[in-house]
Amino acid sequence: RLDTCGIATQIGHLMQLPTPQDKFAEFDARLSRIEGIVTQMDKRLSNLEQGQRDLSNRLTSMDNRQNSNFKWLVGLLITVLMANIGTAIFTGL
Image (cartoon, rainbow, N blue to C red):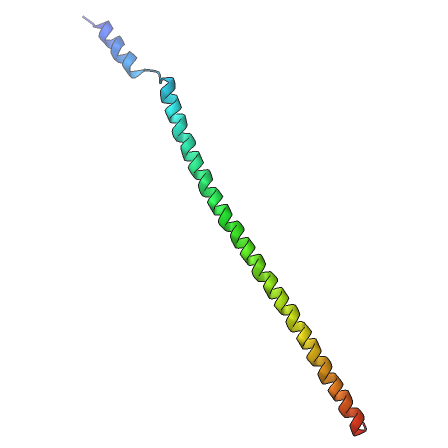
């Protein structure tokens, strides 16, 4: 004789639907994982932004130094040119 009541109980136990609490716990775990990923991305972007600011500051500093060196070079060239012109005038060329 088949025990239909026992089989139905076993099948019912295997096919038990998740409760709202189970679904909420699963949703909460997924949300926590996503929050962790977003936090990690935020840290990485902050590091990239800081690196970009540092690089920009270094380039600005190099540009200012280059401009200063160019002014000195032009000043020295003008001085040498004036010395050559003065020498040519006084030696009678």
